[in-house]
Image (spheres, chains in turn brown, green, cyan, orange):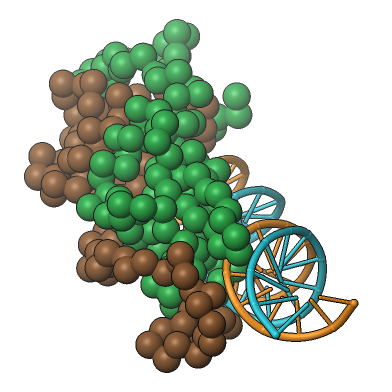
Length: 122
Length: 122
DNA sequence: CTGTTACATAGACGTTCTTCTATGAGGAGG
DNA sequence: CCTCCTCATAGAAGAACGTCTATGTAACAG
């Protein structure tokens, strides 16, 4: 609904053979939830800081303390917390607390799409 | 600059052994231009419409006319044009005109990062 | 209990994004 | 020349995002 110039659908309002050379059949779309999931995943990776965070997590053999993240970036502590929260919302990392500290690590049970996206981070 | 609670740097203002169990060494950061490039690439894939567009392009054996995109999505023609423009800015697609029509296709000379990102689209 | 340290949350502010309507540019047909 | 069609650009409105300061919460130390 609500197109301005709906491309000639089945009606073929177009008179001549103006359509020649255009309008090939296209692939069936990806199921919407899957497309949405992919978009969400990529949005989580659409910030340089979060890319660096994932890089750190991939290189680390142990969970990383938030204090290490705040030390690594010239950003305020709430901003760092915000980015880590986004990575968690996207299902890429998980966190736990030990004493005063909070640690983050890559989720061990990544779904295939998330794992593939993570593979793009150096 | 401008941190509220700068994590204990070299100064070690911290008195006791409160730091025990925290603060492990972290990986060297990704070069900033590379992190930026990755973020830009992922931002291009951070919208369901653009995911679908790339899916169509991957499935197609020929360049796809803009009219096919406008027919495939329930969006206004300028919005479709906008999304295609974003894919082009990200270096993922190229376009050319033939007669009245504009055609888009996946760039044949994708850089490795872009190719890897595209591989995530079904 | 009081103070300190680590982290998260809330709210504000400016920027970017997605979408729309309206208009412009350029080719095709009569 | 004039009209129609296709696509791109311009501008505006509303949502989302990244960043900050200020504040709240939980755990440890004395």
